[in-house]
Length: 512
Image (cartoon, rainbow, N blue to C red; front, side, top):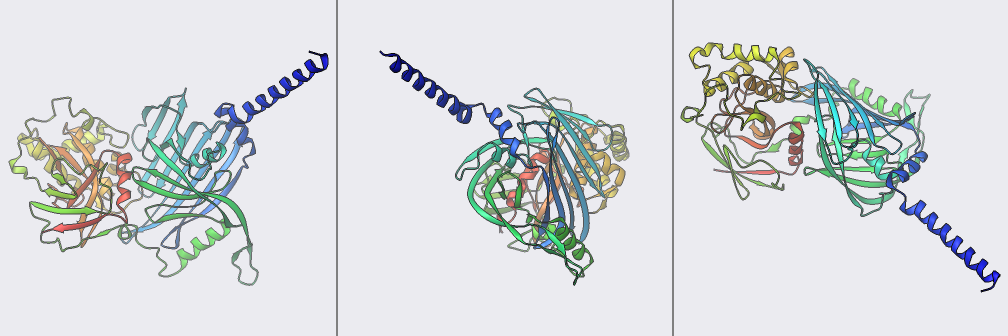
């Protein structure tokens, strides 16, 4: 082979090597390296959103992405002003998430503040699988540790991760672990990229000198992708831009977010506050499920049957205890407390129900104040204080009498409820469960629907172990709870959130 031929072969080999190297750099480099390179193009900034319900502004939200020496800071703020059961309430949440250049969460801070109290949680990631969370909800702060298969995302980071990871391809479906600080839990979220389109978004606002009002100053087209996020049967529909920042979003609860200049959002919110009769609708009433029959004369009965339709029932805890699911028919019976034989005296002596006896971040049954209140509630029983049935009934009466009935917008903590002495079904439930566990009576939270005034509403109540799980209702003063309580889930807030998928979908037919 001539020198020229050898030189030509070497040039071709070198050229092929360069192409292969380039291909590896573009297509085959590790995912984290590609993410680090992609995030260099992200534009820091703050977006504002109108929070709407029934077409009316009920709050304002903002999302700020900023660069910091170690990567990025994503701060989301949300202020809601809602009406529920003819009562008005407000709550503000602030979520700050610190991210590496590859969008991995290193730590977070969450703060919820309302008239009913304050809930704070902060956490940090150690290594690749350990998340340490510190919860402060009244009393001594508590720590919870999670071990995971991978580092979870925050809800606000998820769409950014999709965009920077090159996942915005129509038809693409992917699952990510997402940590939710409001429920102190990690859940798997499935995201489907549904479509791509161009959306017109308000660009800015100017002050009109004639009216003295802020008005929109034009729109600009933004390339956007529509995402469908699903978890536990709940779906959120969102449009995001090429950086993964939300443009608008809607949920099953009837709430929606829409990106808009701050001046326009704030002006509309202030006008709603000042204007007469500008209610956006009642959150409780708007999510009620109409009853097909008058149940007022049946509520005190021993048994009722309901046909449930419109919702996939798999995943709900409809079967067990006082409830029996036969196909799509739910049979609910009211327990007879006089006929129960629990088979134990307080405190519960075995370990099989340890999960229903131990303290939790929002159920501080080991706190001295909870113990004192629980012992005071059953003190009048004297010789019957070891009787779990009598203790369960007396606790129900005590919590019912102790708390003022008031709708709250908060994450209820038993200690905070003990301080404020007011709340709705959630506050009554956490305080009852904490006090029951303090006495050694196994207890858990249940959530579902209750019939009131011709409709079924979201409701929470406690269940206690008396040889079987028995439903109590300290909110309504029922021991045991009436037969029109339909349990769908038990457990902590992470499980209770799944009941949201009933809204607007479930239909209930009563069988006489």
